[in-house]
Each structure stands twice: as structure tokens, then as C-alpha cells.
Amino acid sequence: MTARPRRQQPPKPSGDESSDIGGVRLRRVNRWLVEDLLEDLADLYVESCEKEPSEDYRSRSRQDFLKRLAGDIRRPGFAMVIAETDGLVGYAYGFPVRSDGFWWLGFDGELPRSIEQLTEADRVFAITNILVRPHPQDQALACRLQERLLGDHQASLGATLVDQADHPALSAFRAWGWQDIGESWKPAGATVFRVLVLPLGERTKARLEGLAHHAWTRWPG
Image 1 (cartoon, rainbow, N blue to C red):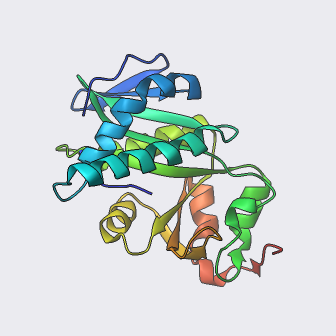
Image 2: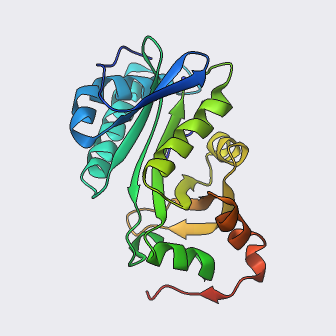
């Protein structure tokens, strides 16, 4: 999961467009148009590294990113929103969380009932990657990207997983309004993830306030 606030010349995708952040345009991109953007997306991902990477690291990071993106693209409902000026400056993408609660498997402990109910109602959208190139208003742009992506899917709650060792990403998400609700382990590896959620709308925010006071349920495992 990447959330570090870093370019290229993407093909002009179709879709709605809006902008009021320093001339940056936001555009929806479907899975077919993403195919035309793969190289630009990978370039921006590699360029976002905090340290100057070696060629070997760049190559491995690029291939790992493209492999993860290819897996996400195949998920039902996959969607992406990109931000661009004269080139690509940011993106956010993800997919709807299935109502069976499968996405939450691996959550350590008991899931808040309010989140379980939103999941059952198909109102949760998983954002698997947000990245914004450094920009005078990068925090505002990141918030616009995530809100546009979630809003397009009429989601009441955003959800994401962040490697708990990735402190810059965790700090960025928290600055963008995300709440940390616990840990998750995935069967494929030993990485411990922090589980973050982003409530949209006053009603959802109210339901998620003071999670410790909610009734709890556990997904069948």
C-alpha cells in the first residue's frame, strides 16, 4: 500500500473531469483505459521512493507494483481516479468490498458491528493505493482523490491496509482523515497491516465515533 505524497505524460483518458486545486484535473479511469497508463503509473510509483533507488531496486519495485495492480484490476468493480496537469501527478484506485466480509478476514479481534453492517449493505470500498507527487496542496489533492473515488461508488466507508512499518504512509493517511481500527494478518505473508477506515457523511461518521462503545461481532473464520 503506497501513500507517499511524487510524473509522466499519460494518455488523455475519457471520463468526468474537475479541478480547483492548482490546475490539477481529476479523471475517472476504467480498467481498459488503465492498460494505456501502466508505464506512467509505474514511473510515478518508482519516483515516489524516499531514497534515490538503484537500478535493480527500481526494476524490482516497478515489477512488484505492476503485479499488484494487475491483480487489483481483475477484481469486480475496480476503478481508478487520476490527477494530472501536463502529466500524471497522482492516483487512487481500489474495488468494492464484497458483502460476505471476505476482505476483513485476518482482522485481529472483533470487527465493529457498524462496519459489519456497512459491509453487508455493500457500502464499503477498499482503496488499495493512493499516491500524490509533492505538490503545494498535496494533502488537499489526496483528499479529493479519495473522496472522488469513494463518492463515484456511493460508498459510506473507505477501507485500506497499510504495512505497520510504513510510518510515512500511516502518517499521511491519518492526516487525510483515516481512522486506525486495528491489525490484520494475511495468509500470504508475515506482514502486519494496520486497518484504516474513512467514514463519509455525517451519519456514517456518527456511527463510527467511539468504536470502543459499539457492539462487536466476529466474522466467521
